[in-house]
Image (tube, helix red, strand yellow):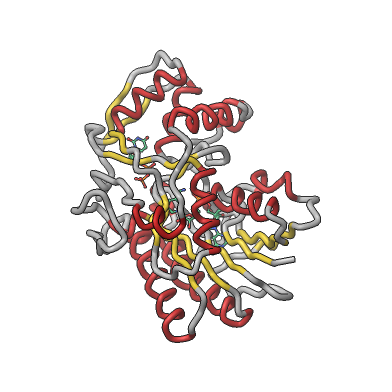
Length: 328
Ligand code: NAD
Ligand code: UDP
């Protein structure tokens, strides 16, 4: 039985990856410190004989007993609100955490896949973004803590690949959504749906002309799975090229949820990218992958998930309280 370590396992993407690898017959070791994740996302796997869990902060030395065939490093705050609140932790998990996991991969002779992001392109001056674009990132702006950590992460991963011959993969993930996103993580989909469910106005940042391209979780997991099993070591974009302005997206949510509330405008966050759309030619070519789930279908499933949450979860303080975590 192949053994895979998944960091960030209690998060949105990580928990879906655990499900996929278990379904494929792997022994899965999940690792997380719950800083932005939720044990509930893994509750259904607790008794599963193919699953074990280690509570651990990956910025500290990472030790796992036994062999490992694959490591998927997904631990990192991923929502702008989260990484603005815990900027040092975000920098550390992308840098020190990645270094620890590369070291573990080297010791175990495991293949490692690193979760990078469309944020490595910053506020892009090239559209759509293909892997050969170097990006337009403000290193010292508030988002720089995430963007630069991820750029460092790619850089050190390639260095381990070149110097130590480590078997590495890098996925550049574009905005992905679906069940198990945290309702209060501030990202636009849980934010708008949460507002609709609570009967609040929808907050559009800026004039809403900025664009995003949303990928449903099942498509994202399929792309990551194929990339891991491929022999391609350079970064690959995985996302859905179907682009929409945030204003049009807010209108779609109003229609989907039937809310009577209106749209209100808030300041555009500093360095918020004005456009984002993945060029997925490379993924199509080398993985034979492209997204299959239309936004209407994916959003309906996501809405159904958020509707099923308890009233308590729906009204829990809008943002996560990080003070209980030992953040240094
Ligand atoms: P998430 O916040 O739901 O999950 C991240 C998980 O990592 C959480 O469970 C958190 O507790 C854990 N974590 C954070 N720091 C840790 C540490 N030091 N030690 C151990 N665990 C730690 O976010 P997500 O959307 O599932 O994102 C997962 C990964 O995918 C991240 O690396 C993120 O940068 C990347 N990504 C996600 C998206 C997206 O649209 N969801 C886009 C681009 C990149
Ligand atoms: N956004 C918004 N209202 C919200 C939350 C987000 O208009 O309540 C905008 C945000 O400014 C950005 C887009 O929606 O332009 C996507 O934001 P998100 O935080 O989901 O992710 P990003 O792609 O910026 O990392």
